[in-house]
Structure formats: structure tokens, C-alpha cells
Image (cartoon, rainbow, N blue to C red; front, side):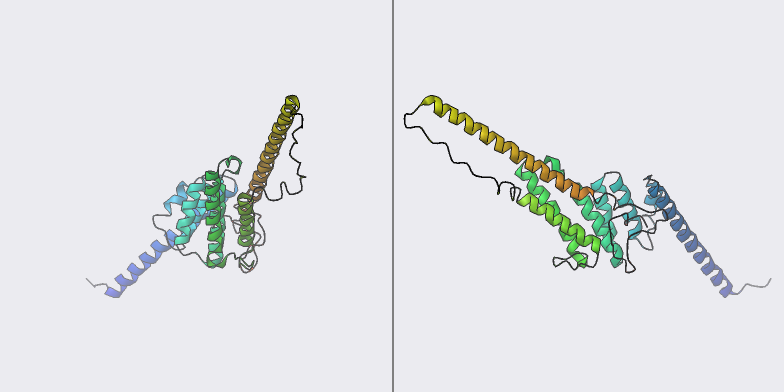
Length: 263
């Protein structure tokens, strides 16, 4: 019986390995494609995408990014932050790095309940989170303090976060500067107790009115801050083919309309 040369066994082995790798890559591409289609139809089932984490190569950041987007859309911002953190740890390219950072910063901001900042402790916690989101955008130059960040969306979000920080740090700025100051009530020479009682009541009413106005101003500031955040709500979205929209040729964002879709 004629023996088969060893080199043919080697060629066959290499062919089998190539076939297995091709099947794995094809399955990965199909899984991601199906996920993107479902995502764009507002179906955020992540079971299949989670399986990609077991044999996560190449582009290991992709499934973490996709799972982060799904968690964000479901309102699970803490899980989204965890997934985006893992995505950043898997060395995404520069343009993808900025998109992941934007999504993570938005997730951080969305953990703040701007309508329930009724104590200094809660305000301090909100400021800590906002500064953390801001620093995330400044890393790797996605945004910068001089307005020259290499991603337009990251730069705009950084500016919006700066505005939120300023409102939380100086809630009374501009609220009462134009209001005329009233002179304190003068005590009558005859010491009339009825007049002094009336003046006291007037003062209480005036103080109460000022407190109500300050409360109203604070609520309006909180609403403005929430509106600043909600205008980004469509940023983590997708178009029909999952390829993204609104970016320029260099991968820089040029708007907030659904650029951060799954990959």
C-alpha cells in the first residue's frame, strides 16, 4: 500500500484550520448583522451577542460596545457603563474610541436624577459624576478645554456637561441679580404693636414668596439640565444598514442624530 506523503497531511490540517476560522468569522459577522437589524427595530435581545464574548476575536471591543448600546436603550445605565468600560479596555481604534467614550459619558450623566437634587450631598454626587464624564471625553483628545477636540460630538457633549456643572455650582447666578432690594421695615416711634405685627406678617409673606421663586428657579434649572441631556437621547441609535450616519470621512461626528449605532 502506497503511503501518503506527510506534506499532504500538513496541507489538509492547515485547510481544516482555515475552514474552522472562516466558519467562526462568518458566524460572528452574521450574529452581529442580526443584532444590528434587531437593534434598529428597537429589539434589544442580547443573548446571541453575549455568546461572542467567549471567543472574542478579532475586534474584541465590538460585542461589548453593542451590548452597552442595548443596555443603554433599556435604561440600564450601570450595565451600559460596565460594557463600555470593557470595550475601551479592548483597544478600539481612535474613531471608535471616541464614540464609546461619548456613549459612556452619556450613560454616566443619565444616572443623575436632576429632578431630585434636593440636598447638597446629592448635588455633590451629581458634580462628581459630571466631572467623571467630562474627564472621560478629555482623554485621548476626543474633546479639549480649548475647543479643539478631534471629535465634534465629544466636544459638544463636553460643553453641555460644563454648562450642567456651572448650573449646579452656581444655582443662584442671574436669578435674583435684577430684582430690586426692598428696604427693611421701619419700626414706628409709638411702638404700635398692631403695625409691627402687620410688618412681621408682610416680611414672612415676602420671605415665603422669595423661597417659592427660588424653588421655581431651581426646578427650571433642573429641567434645563435634563433637556440638555435628553437632546442626546437619539445619539445612541442606528440607521437601517447599521453603518452609521452623520460622520465625516475621517470618522469624526458632525451631529447627534443616530451616529452611535451597533457595529
